[in-house]
Image (cartoon, rainbow, N blue to C red; front, side, top):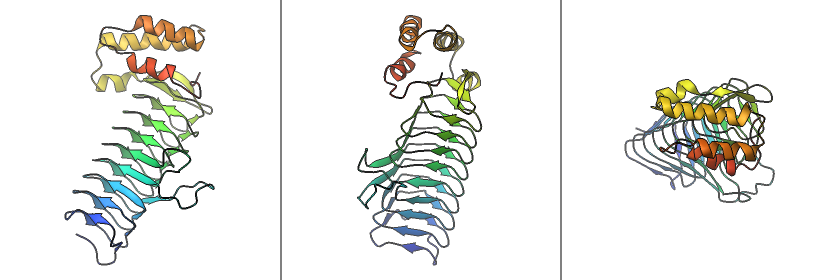
Length: 255
């Protein structure tokens, strides 16, 4: 299962059924769980823990952070299960100035040339189209979609079920359910098709539409919008996560 040209550090812990292709390099105390596949020329360096059934296409690189303050401190990457990383994806370990780790959840689809920088946290079921890039300290919540060549400024947060259109330049938080696009990115509506695909019913979608109007169509200040959205929330708590997001936004939201 391991090609003869691959270079594997003796400290690495690799499950018996992991497939490792030609010219891969694994150095340091890397842990790779069962069902993973590394195609040719994959590079993994440092304290990296990889779950089950992940597929790394050629030239994926997991390495030290691109941070001038980094001084070879022992930082980490944690990757969950069932992720796909296409060609030339780059992932950086964390820094001691922040949480010391970069975390990627489960069932994510990361297309060619995408970049996940140091101390980022990516949830589950996210899609990164080609060359989407996260600066350091970014949080991407579950089911978010980043269109091709999307750029996200450091310390931003991308809310669950949001959609960032192709070429978006994002320098503030993107609330849950919202579609943004442009340079700089602005709000364009709600992610209606995505919500339907994920089982949101008409009443829930209606609540989300009203919350979008409260945020973007009425001239409300953010605190006024939060108060109005709180009143709009339904018995299912459809807007609970949005309210939590808005109340805890540190960079302000895309407006």
